[in-house]
Image 1 (cartoon, rainbow, N blue to C red):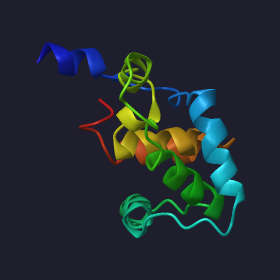
Image 2: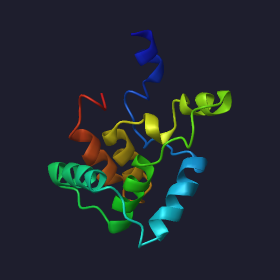
Image 3: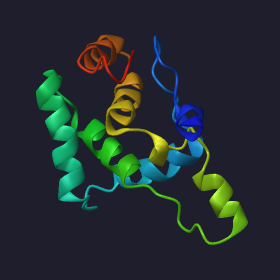
Image 4: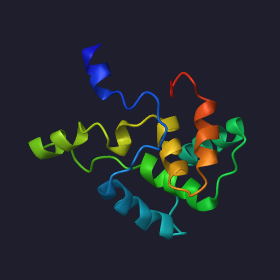
Length: 125
């Protein structure tokens, strides 16, 4: 139980979770590549959350979510990689809802972020 508590993010976000630059940098390269094919299951996941909340996502937001969700540590073989994989704020540690909330929070229209988190009160208490 203690390990779970250490991994918790801010319980009541008034502002979106900040995404780390090292995660965003690699993801943005994939967002710009229109020929890059993301996993169908990842796309369906984000589209399902969009439909559930009634929030229309821009194509760039869908691609950014997919790029971030599919981003994992390249290797967890050496000690440095293991340390990086345990960093609490890395995108692979975020739930699907928290990750999409962070993507929505990058927009200047924060009302979409607040509407989204209102649909998941058990996650964003």
